[in-house]
Image (cartoon, rainbow, N blue to C red; front, top):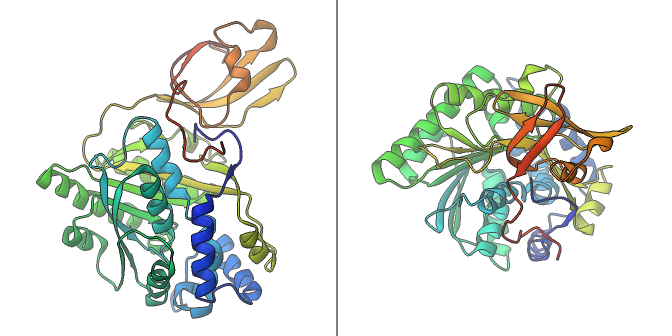
Length: 386
C-alpha cells in the first residue's frame, strides 16, 4: 500500500467493539490448545481438507477459536484495499453505498473491516455473509448483535452456488477472503468457478448500469500469492474482469516469471494487547497484516491512475540503493548510485514498497534517470496515526 510507510494503530473504535462483543459471547477463554491445532490446519494445510475429513469451520471449538483470534487479525485487510482505491481517486463505492456479498464469510471477518471503513468514509453498507458452516454464520450474527455499533447485516448458510446467489441477491460488491483456495483447492476448477462469479457480476452491471466489483484476498505465502496471481492472469486472458489493484492495469504478473518469486502486501500494525495475549497461549504473535489481493472491476473501469509500482523493500548496497519495480513489461531492478544522485532521482533514497510512479526513465542497466511519483498529494489516510 503506497500510503503505509510506518506501523499503524489498530483502530480504537474497532478494537473496543470487537473486544466487548467477543467477551460478551465468552469466546476468549481457554483457547490455547485449540488455536495451536487450528494454526496447523491454516498455516500448513491451508485450510483445505481431504476427502472424508471435516472442515475446521464445522467444529464448534475451532470456529470459536477462529472468531476470537483470526477474525480481528484479518478483518482490516479489505479496509486497506478499499482505502488504497479511495486515495487513488477511484472510489470503490461510487454510488456512496454498497450491497456487499462475502462468500465463505466464516464468522464475518470481512464484515468488520468493510463496515468500519464505510462508517469512517460516510458510506452506506448492506452486508450479506454466506458460508457452508452454520457454526460460523451463527457466530457472525451473534457478534454483530452484541456489538455497540454495526451496519445492516445478515448471514446465510447452505450450499447454494455462488453465481446463483449473486443473481438472486444482486450485490454491488462480492468478496472472498482466505476462501478461494479453501473452497476450490483445484486451480483449474478455481478459475472456472471464479469466472462464473465475474460473469454474474458483469451481467448485473449490464442490466442496471451500476459498477460491480470483486475483491479476492488470500494469505501472503508464496504458494497462495502465486496461485492468486495466476488466477488473476487467467481471468483477464478470458476477458473476465479488469484488475484495478494492485496491478493498476491488465498486465501479466511479472512475479510469475521466476518460480521462486511472489507478490504480496505486508502492513505493519500495532494490534491490541488482548489479541496478542490470546495468541501467546498458542505461541502466536501478530505484528503485521500479510496478504495478497486482487481488486477487480467486472465491467469497464476508468483509466488507471498510475502504471508503475515498487514491489520490493528498498535495498541498501555499498554506494547505491536498489529496488524491484513492476512495469507492464514485467518486474525489473532499478537503482540509483549515490555518487550520481541529482534533483530528478534523489527521492529514490526514501522510497518504500507500494509506492506508485506515473512514469520513469530507466537506463539499460537499471539506473534511474528520472521518475514522476503518482501520489505526491493524496487525501488524509484513515490509517494515519496523527
